[in-house]
Length: 202
Image (cartoon, rainbow, N blue to C red; front, side):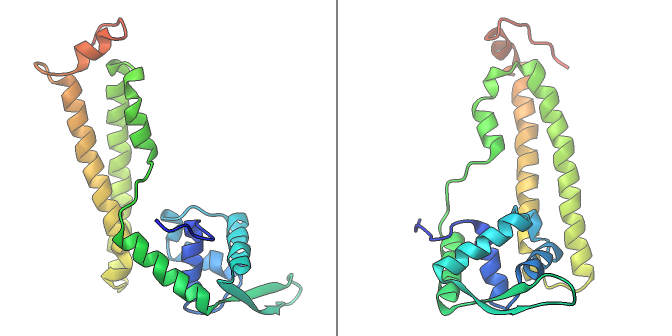
């Protein structure tokens, strides 16, 4: 993967929205939230302002004007530069076309899960299934509501992807529970024995 001058994915979103029209950071923040980007990209006002400054330093955005609305503080409007448009397109091509090794927290937990007993893990996994079901419901609601409002499916593709991941994880967690609890071949007794404990089926 290419080393980026500004590697925070929030910068990619900023470049994308500035490619449509110049904005000041407060307007960018409002646009990101209105479009549901907070579900995909973690940010707050402070991190957004910092990213805009980093993009400006890298030459990807530039000040267009400074304006004042009544008694409010001055706001600097930024526009994307030609270098910024090139960076946006190159970065997107890379992210879409080249798989990356990521480090999800759940994968990290799974790599260390044997430190808990199966008697602890099974209830936790069942609780996770409940949480996943709620997240799936919320993602489906976003899709259904947006489609009902006439939003083209292309602009919902990240929600469709998120829903697919949630469904796949639910299947995995269900199968993991079965691998632990199966009366004949389950890992529970052997796992518990490693802790000097007895496996107690639910």
